[in-house]
Image (cartoon, rainbow, N blue to C red):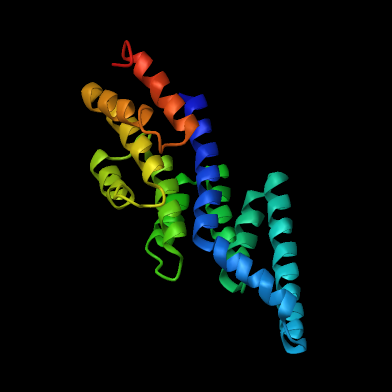
Amino acid sequence: MADIFQEVDEDVRRDKAMAIWRKYGTYLIIACVAIVVGTAGRVGWREYKAAQRAEDSGRYVAAIQLMDKGDTAAAITSFQSLSADASTGYGVIARFQGAAARVKSGDKNGAVVLYDKMAIDDDLDPIFQGLAQLQAIMLLIDDGAAEDLDRRLTPLLVDGASWRYSALEMQAVLKHRDGDTAGARAAFKALSEDAGAPKGMRSRATQMLLTYGGEG
């Protein structure tokens, strides 16, 4: 099932971009208009914020390069530092990348701890809280306790939740993992027929149904 989980991760990244745009798209447009009509004082503020973004961006790129080179320990330290004092969105990104670096280093439990902290951090937008919970679930889906995974999935499954479809897929995978063939089949069938679900997710659900001997 490695290929399926790779596709799941790709869909999560696509879902993230769309969720963030739905949440912040209007504000981004307003910000662009403000730049056009801004006063000289606002120009000075923009230059100050731009300098901060440039500094945070440089630190972020440096941390990514460390991870690409295999120096995950140094990358983890860099991401931790950036997440602690960055005044721009790079701080949030650094928290997610710091968890990813721990996974790469083999410290799955450490990554789950970081994701769990983000999931309950009310200073984060609910979109990011939900994403952190989903990332923790994906790390635990192979061998995590079913009761714990059900608890983690519950808030993500409510109608209107940003990550509902991804959570529904993880719920179906969990049923499959635990041998609940009827439950898994029903869950995958519902996903395969849901026009609102991402196309790749519907395709995977159909593939899973075929492993049970058919789509019906």
